[in-house]
Image 1 (tube, rainbow, N blue to C red):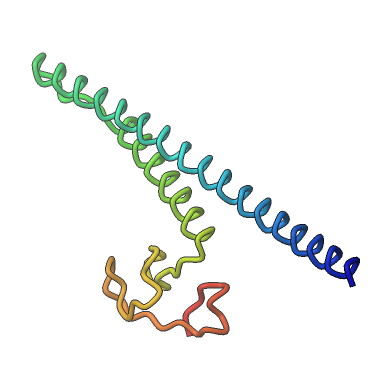
Image 2: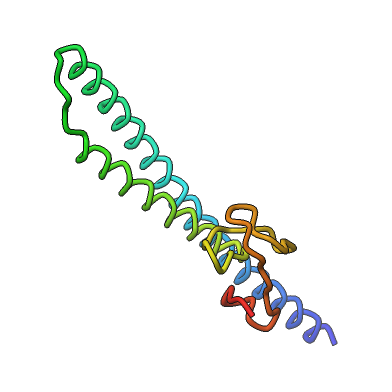
Length: 131
């Protein structure tokens, strides 16, 4: 009986370790994504500062300037930030609006971003699909 007790205790400890190991990996991955988002936001802030400085200098000197490249780079960063934010939301098993794709509350009936009615089939919730 003592051997069975120790075997069960060992199995439980092993399972707990495996779960903790998996969760630690998920946390590390999420933190890496958050760090990348912070880095992208910092880069975007620098681009906004550059844009403002160039705009100021152009107006001061009577030029109209061409800011399309900076605008495009800022939009590219915004898209990357959105993708990384969605990765975090997917990792947290959040629900997503089938219309606009934004993360929404599990119990939401309407999307708080676009106003679309959202209905989720619990059997398809793993894939975040609309019924």
